[in-house]
Amino acid sequence: MHAFFEATNHYFEHAASILGLSENMKVLLATPERELRVEVAIEMDSGQIGNFIGYRVQHDNARGPFKGGLRYHPTVDEDEARSLASLMTWKTAVVDLPYGGGKGGVNCDVTKLSRAELERITRRFVQQIHDFIGPDKDIPAPDVGTDAQVMAWIMNEYGKYHGHQPAVVTGKPVELHGSLGRESATGHGVAIIAREFLQHTWNRPVEGTTVAVQGFGNVGSFTSRELYDMGAKIVAVSDAYGGVCNPEGLDIPSLQQHVAAHRKVVGFSGGDSCTNEHLLGMEVDVLIPAALGGVFDAELAEEVQARAIIEAANSPTWPEADEVFHRREIPVVPDIVANAGGVIVSYFEWVQNLQHFRWSIDQIRAEQDRRHVESFAAVFDLARRQGVSLRTAAFVLGIQRVGRAKVLAGI
Ligand code: NAD
Image (cartoon, rainbow, N blue to C red; front, side, top):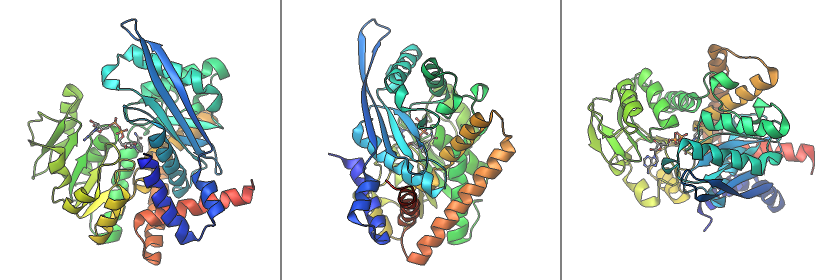
């Protein structure tokens, strides 16, 4: 089974056929440049040996160093890393960053690890891959199960081998060469893209729009908060333990306080509890998956009552579901456009590290929004002109740019 990579390649193939790419070019663009699979053995707090497997897939670097997150989760494997690395190649190209695509992580359950074990796993992983990453080679960032602290450990461990080089990783703590606005960047970007989508498609404002968000981690919580601040009515949110809903709209700042104290949304007094299944089938203007991939299959896609989907998570939609949404005329803003805010501000963090200079939050937001809004407009126009979905248009744009870079550079 190579489900996730197959799904990403399905979208790739469709766009590549519209572009009329030769078979050779398709193979060249689809094949990852390098795949690392390493043993991450550590001593557990109990004194036992913990044996974990780490991955780093470097998909393409025609436009610049490999760039993409590190995920710590029990689902991490070659297939998932390959698929996410490929998505990063098209994503960085769609938003026109001087990067390629990579992704990786460690197969582990962070909920069962102590902080000391997490640090040992991270340092051991870096010991195994440090020769293959670097500011001009491959620059990891946070994803599911990893955060600014993990990035700080990566920077520190890498420095033991190669000297102090903060630009080896992005998403670091602001006090340790991180960028202002990076933590909230992906959620902020999703909210901006929701605003642009509503305006371009239905000429309506965010204010009063009903929204349901699956996942209340980094991306889901900041997306909810930004849309709430823009006047949207967030009628339901959920996490791995269940959801809460309120038809009048949830008070997101209070919910964030509840989650900070209890680590889950369930039990929040400002709404009724509901299941993830219920949330995904709710009648809302915008449904935002912001948890893991593979959420929508064909069956669930038939039951979705939302008017539009904005993919904050990576790969939430299987190709069969995508066809159902297309047939039912439910527009989907694809992951490689919707959640690119994170990698855009990661790029600014890298630039600041290389410049040894700190940008203001106003400068960061202005540049982030400009780039993201322009990219969305380009994808939207292409989709309209060619009569294709937003996803196909985004892939066409990304593939075209990477293909052109490959041809210009030569093999
Ligand atoms: P996170 O670990 O901070 O949060 C994940 C959230 O999903 C948590 O609230 C968790 O409880 C919830 N969740 C897990 N399983 C669930 C389930 N079965 N049903 C409902 N909720 C569930 O991760 P994150 O960084 O917020 O990433 C979320 C998604 O966004 C991922 O697909 C990731 O690849 C994507 N993404 C993240 C970034 C970033 O900057 N962090 C950037 C681009 C894309």
